[in-house]
Image (cartoon, rainbow, N blue to C red; front, side, top):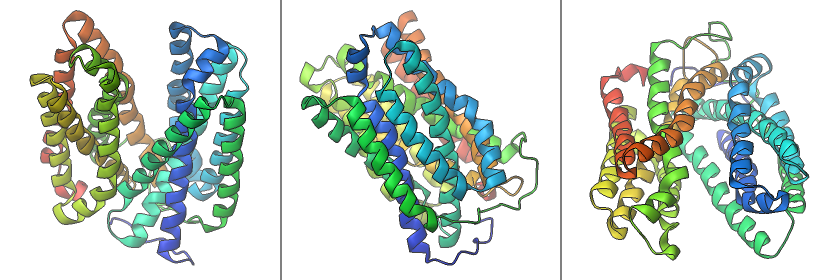
Length: 387
């Protein structure tokens, strides 16, 4: 690791458990909202266009908060910010359940995106600090906890939606649970961030190693965004799966992504960061080309399985590497890399749609496969010491 481990009085396993729990809370809040989007749409009588407009407010809030998040973590420390941000995240989640108009929902989603990124930067900074205590890669397992929370929230949301429980009541219950766990966890957070004394201004242009990491994240998150928004459409229009099987591509992708995150740290210790990036990029490219070249249910499912494994480790490991920057504090470095990476998440889905309208969805997915290949190429060209 690039920085000496911060001095902290508790055992490293305690910190790891607490930070893993904070990642779980972050994923729980986001996925709780996502699981009830159909209920909110029905409750407010929103058209698809209205809902699409409202949903744009969330990434807008996230993007606005990116530079502010890094500044705040650098000034106050991630321990303070992550506790306050989780309280705010839960509160805004509860507010979404109270929305009574498109305007209220849009404002709420902007605040939800803003608060969510405050949590994201601060909790990843905490993760970098715990990684420093272990002196080995453990960041991917934290992101695995986020994915696990997503499955949990989706399951709970499905049950509650079937039982007719209103989103308002559901969201308040989650808020209270998040607040309770956060309050208990606050005293066990890392009080000193890794790289807290690193040089450089708070608002700084990323240096070349961070810029390359950001581009790797951009390529990977472009793939993720495409899979989140277009996997069901691909299975419906290209694979022509039966209605009951349309959602299996997305489910397969999510399951393999979550599984991959829990083994990525072990693979990194065995193979090295560069090699993991190379393998991940290769799996993304191979999986998508398999789904494009052989668009049948078994082969497409196998392809999406490979893509899930491919994307699983890239962003967590990029965050871990960025947090070890020698030129700026961990929170600022994470914000810089996140800004570049998240642009890929935003750009991917509309580019897929544009190319599909001009040519075909299979051609669009071929472009996404090329993004996976770029991850492998960038990792190969990158100096080992920088990764």
